[in-house]
Length: 218
Image (cartoon, rainbow, N blue to C red):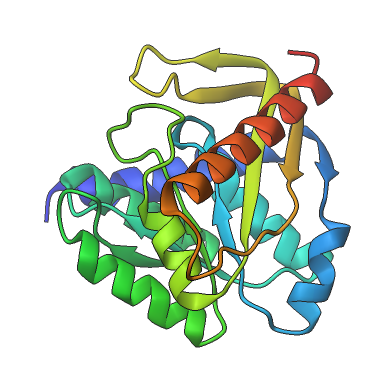
């Protein structure tokens, strides 16, 4: 195992925690999820790839302050995916490895098994390589197969840097105003037209992302 794989995840987790405690965070839509958490009803969270940096820290914060449940996430089988997997586990998240291009069917089965066991999962539906902010079909298949509702999730911060990457990855600056927005939980029936459902999820993700941006004045 390389020194990078050993040292980068703990260093990144420490940096995110240090950044997180400086943020002024507004939470929207959390109360609507509390009945799901209290009744152990599994949820499928969806968030754009470019907004994921602070999500593991936020999930740990919500477990501590709001009674949220632990979440299982999907990470690709690439070298970058290995670093991500080692990073998110430091926030109490567990990981399924796979992507649309490598191990996708196996990862989908593992996520479905987690949901059926009552565990919340999180999916980045435009990852790992895009196109940016376009939902791929896997999350719709997962929701239809398990009956668990999809919850669109967004994070925004101002001021923040947007990297010159395919997803314009957002990095909040210290002491930024931040917002996390949870949309309405929506189920996907087994007989629904998959493209119609995909477009609906995509629109819902755009809506919560726009709201998060508005809440921080972007």
